[in-house]
Length: 245
Image (cartoon, rainbow, N blue to C red; front, top):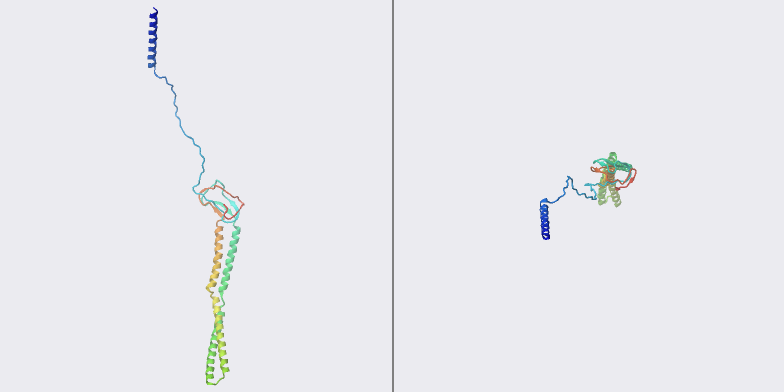
């Protein structure tokens, strides 16, 4: 009897195991359901850097003077040709006027040098030359006549010597009058050396004038390009030196 109960229990347990296996096979895999929402995936990277301008100008003072006006400010956008600053050019203007007066005086000095003697003085000297030439011709003719008489024994050696001295004096006087006429003509027509001297002095004065005028033209500093004022190193009223940024 006990043996029948034991066999029955075993069979019952085996049946339960078989049913459990069948159920687990047919039941499927248990999963968890999640709801997906739309979104954006991005990577954020922080870096440090410096903006480098394509073109950069560093402006400098063209001459020494007081900064009368500073029209630009840091960070200001300017257009090419806009006024940035004004430097006091009064001293340059004084120097320019002084040089202009010097050049004018030099031109007057040159004109006075080239003016020469009046025409009447040259004509008078030409008459003196002509008279000296006639005197020399007469003295030479007289000496020739005395020499012939001396050869014939009609006059003494002293007479011949005196005639020769008169001819020599007439020659010297003619040379003196010719030299005086030459000097007068040179005064009215200056030598190439004299012209070169005055030309060199005028060119030097004019070069200084041109330099000052060029510097005066830069007393108003303009923007060379379109851009942004990056940095200012001066303020209105400062005394800026030549070449200072």
